[in-house]
Each structure stands twice: as C-alpha cells, then as structure tokens.
Length: 283
Image (cartoon, helix red, strand yellow):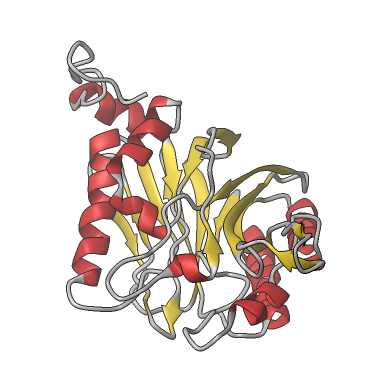
C-alpha cells in the first residue's frame, strides 16, 4: 500500500501565500506518512480573466526560480515525492527590425507555460511536463496567456510506480492517457483547475473514471476549489471505483493505494491486451 496525499486548494493572487500554504501541506502530509503529494493546476497563483498577460508573466518563474527551489527543499527535508505546478517563464526572443531600427518582441512575449514539475524525495527535479492542450473552449481562451507544450511526457518512477502526467483539459483527449499507459504508466496524475459550469462536474467525473477504466490505471486528479473552480478532487481506481471525492473541502486527504490491484484488474479486464493492433496503432 502506498499513502498518497491529494491537495485541493484555493490559490489566491498572492504567489508567496500559495507557496507557504503548499509547504505546509507537504510538511503535514509527510507527518501522516504520505510518500507522494499531488497538487492541482494553478498552484502558483489564480489568474482571473481580468489579469493581463504582463501581470501573469511577472508572477511566472523559470524552473530554477524560488518557487520550485522551495518545493525541492521541502521534498528533501520531508522525504516525500512532490507533483506540483507552476507558471513557467518562457524565453522570449528579441528580433531586430532593420526597417525601423527597433527591437520588437516575438509573439510569445508575456505568455507562459502551464508546467507540472516532478520532484523526488531527495529534492531533485526529475522531470517536467508542459500542458499540451490549452483550454480554448466553452468561453475560455487559455492561448491568450499560455503557451502549449510540444513534447509528450515520458513516465517516471515514483512511489506509485511509473507515473504519467497530464493537465486538466488534457483529460478530454483520450489518446494522451493511452499513450502514457502504453509507455508504462500504472498511475496517471492530472493536476487540474476544472471550471464550474453546466454539466462540467458530470464531465469531470465521467472522464476521470473513463481514463482510469480504459487504461487500467489509478487516476489521481487534484483540483482547485473556490474562485471559478468546482473542487471534487478525485482518486479513481483501475476498475472505476471512486476511492476519494474531496467535494468542496480545502486542504489535503490521504488515501492508501494498492498497486497490486492494477495487475489484478488488468488480468480480469484485459483492455490493453485485447486491442486490435492489426487494425490501428496509437504510437
């Protein structure tokens, strides 16, 4: 059994406040013997629609910045694996416009990556994942502020076995979860900022359960609460059983997950084995 901590938080506009809250969740989760802690999307800061690109960019940090450095330090001190999220600052290029002898910034200025960082219990940043699918749907347009990633995630070792990561809107694209599974993931972690709205909670529950069932994996989906978000952070087992639904609670919950259950379910419901490799290929 592996003790997993899932954090459901209401990120404020204050990055430092959110960092202190995150460090406290790490410390308390470790005290309760958790081996891995999973934070939601937008952990670093809430970004309201009224916030400008420049304001969000000023909040963002490189991977070597203070936010990740403090998380790494806490992971090491508390002997816990951390799955976290940040606004990662992109490197904008200066382009020389010879016609008017002015330097203009490229079109990506003041846009940032929505990035998941994975830190092991020794405080080492072992991987990162930049959200691939930006939420340009249902009245939102994340691409105005965010840059999409361009690389698939390669699963990494963790206390939960090989894990794959995806972010929020990525859940609506089943091929991504399947690719992560075919690459060896036995658990999928999906930090999210799932927005409230008509049928949105239904979609959230259905897709989290579907991604777990169709791949025979644990699906761990920590979500934001408050502001415009619906909460209901979830842990779903490989058979679609909802192990945890945090409702509107803020803070962390710890669940014990049995990794042997993955093999048991995959043996009795061999969806991966029964695929028609002769007719289609995912990768």
